[in-house]
Length: 129
Image 1 (cartoon, one colour):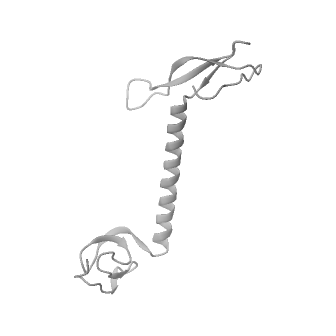
Image 2 (image 1 turned 180 degrees about the horizontal axis):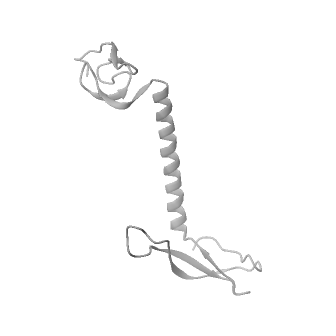
Image 3 (image 1 turned 30 degrees about the vertical axis):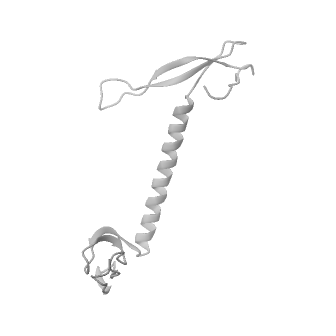
């Protein structure tokens, strides 16, 4: 139920009435309409009703939005590192030790590869692990 709601019509304090189920837009992969809960609040002073998303749904949506932002930031960072030549957009096998990697420098043996030509510019130590 969360915080107290104020009636937008008269300024009175709204009271929680009940949880109602709202039908959403049709899902093209299903033959039923998705339903989601909404909190119904009624103003006892003027009778106005208002629907609000439950606190759990607001938190779920905020978490989803934050995760999408983090994913976008990671992708932009990844694209910048590819553009700068720090990492490859594709995984490749280290020519020295066989470790699958994206980075210029192998974290296992230290081999360095030119990511434009994919040629090893500094051989690593195959025994280093």
